[in-house]
Amino acid sequence: MSQRFAGLSRLKTGGEGTMSTYDIRLFLRRVPLFYSLSESQIDMLAVGCAWRSFSRGRTIVAEGEPSQSLYILLSGRAKVQRSDSEGKEVILAVLGAGEFFGEMSLIDDEPRSASVITLESCDFLAIPKDNFLSVLNQSTEICLGVMRGLVKRLRSADRKIETLALLDVYGRVARVLLDSSELTEGNRIVRNRLPRQQIAKMVGASREMVSRVMKGLESEGFIAPMDEGQILLREKLSLYL
Image 1 (spheres, rainbow, N blue to C red):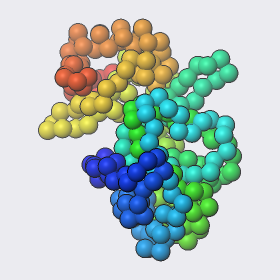
Image 2: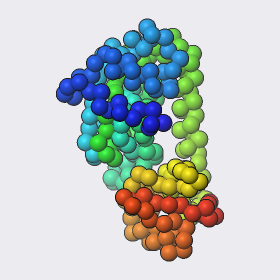
Image 3: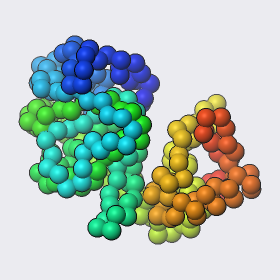
Image 4: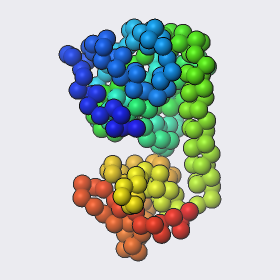
C-alpha cells in the first residue's frame, strides 16, 4: 500500500497544518477506504482537514482521550500501544502509509482504547469527526470499508491471543518476523528495522530474551541479517509456528 502514497508527503505547501485543497483531495482519493466516494463527498471530507508532521517518538493520540478526528498516515510508521498502571507496555499493531486509525472512538463515542506513537517521522491527515460521520451516514461502501477494517483488526487480535497462549517465545518472535516481512523475488524480507525492545513489547517477553532468541534463530540458519537492519527469513522459520 505504501507505494500508492509515494511522494505525497512532499505535497505540503507550508508549515504544519497547511496543505492545499487540491493536495488534500488528491490524498483522500488514494485512500482505499474512500475509493467509492463522489466528488461532493470528497469535498465534504476535505473541509477542515489538517496536515500534521510528527518526529519519531511523538504521541499522535493518547489512550483514554476523547476522539475528535479520524487519522490517516501519509508517510512513516506508527505503533498502536497500550499500557497498564505500572507502565508495562504492549504493542498491538504497527501501522504504515495509507492506514487509518481513530475510527472506533468516533463510532461509539468512547475514549480512545490505545495510544498511537510514531516509530519514525510521520506525516498524517486529521479528518474532523463531524465530516467523517456525515460521509459515513451517506455511504454504504464507507460503512463496509470501516467494518472490514474492524474485522481485520479483530482477526489480528485473535491471532495475537492465540500466539501468546499457544506458542513459546521462539514461536512468538517467529510470528512477528513473518508478519513484518515482505515477499520480494521469492524471498521473505523484514525491510523495516525491528528493535529488540519493540519485538519484546509485541511478544510479551524481555528484551534480553528476545536478543537470545534472535541470536539462536540466526545461528541455526532460520534468519540472516542484511544491510541497513533488514532481515532475510528462511522458509524453515515457519516450523516454529
